[in-house]
Length: 480
Image 1 (cartoon, helix red, strand yellow):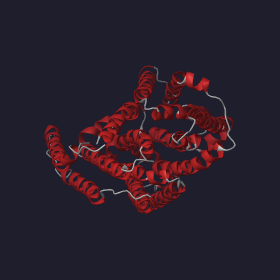
Image 2 (cartoon, rainbow, N blue to C red):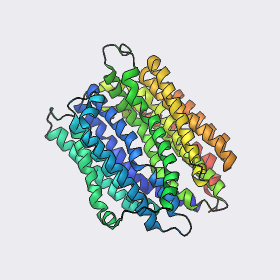
Image 3 (tube, rainbow, N blue to C red):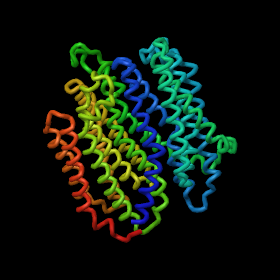
Image 4 (cartoon, rainbow, N blue to C red):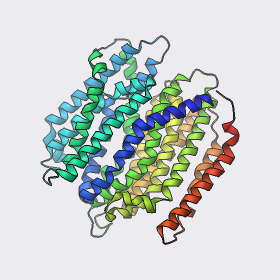
């Protein structure tokens, strides 16, 4: 239990550095939806979808390779750092150079003629993100979670300040959505100052023996991440193309993308929890892999992770009648019905990340590629068949089906190569019963908001008490 408590503490710190900044960034949704109508916000949503996918290529899976090779017995961490940083630098510089040179045809291909500046801003943002990705990974490996959090928080406060200044006090319609990307670029450049000492100490390095090993380990991770990001972003990139023109009467497909993108932000409340946990758990799993009790430890961690995510699933889903006002313009409210589906989908994504430790510890990372590509196929097929009949709800269901299928497949493969005694029945029961409870609670409407909120608060309190009653015996267990 001590190890679990340490992991929980690190997760909180990484949450301060990753979840809290992105939650604060989530608050910008209100500012953006106040300024930009759904059609324009749909363009922002689509462009950020491309950024998310391309970021995976820029880092090339080298963060995970860094953890794996830097924690091996007798490893020279500085040498491993130099190799991984070199790989990321080469890939990211070549990528950004290509985007700058071909910004005009890329803008035309995205149906954004005259938006070459946007393409350049985006490519520079991705370059900076890539440059600091390995230094941030080093902070995680060295368990400098406080420093990690501080850097992330400074970045987000600068980002929020710039967005408020640009959109509230210096807004020029001719610049429009460019403000969002300019603010991101300026805030990210601060990272270069934070890691200045680390970056000037970096020396380009290619090791004829170690570098090919790391590339062979990393590229399946990159393909896995690319397929995984396709799973997350594909609906944003295809919704406007696959949505029938008359599906939402009187509204363009870009309008639907804008609503979907804004409401998708609420699903990120679960995604950010998953990400904060993943930042802490990935180096933790590697560090404890040699412990003979690690399978039981990993199973217990996954169980408590599911419990926490179920609390978030219920708490957010039954309070959407209140939370929806973060969207600002009531035109966006019509899409809030997709939020519980997105939350559940991200919950399964988090479980998948926990289960996936088996192929990372056994150096069978190609299984991650197989699983992610399979998930991408489910995503593509799901969107293709569901968007025409259910609109952006179809996109949300496709995402849920993708992560659910990946979780099941990862569990089945993992039990064959690296058996872990997961509490399958109990964990599934938590997820199913929580989902049924939120559906039941959302059937009640008391008219006055204060009555609705009081009812929802009471449900959450009772739910937490039940969880404590069920889990209390484990809290007292003196395991390490």
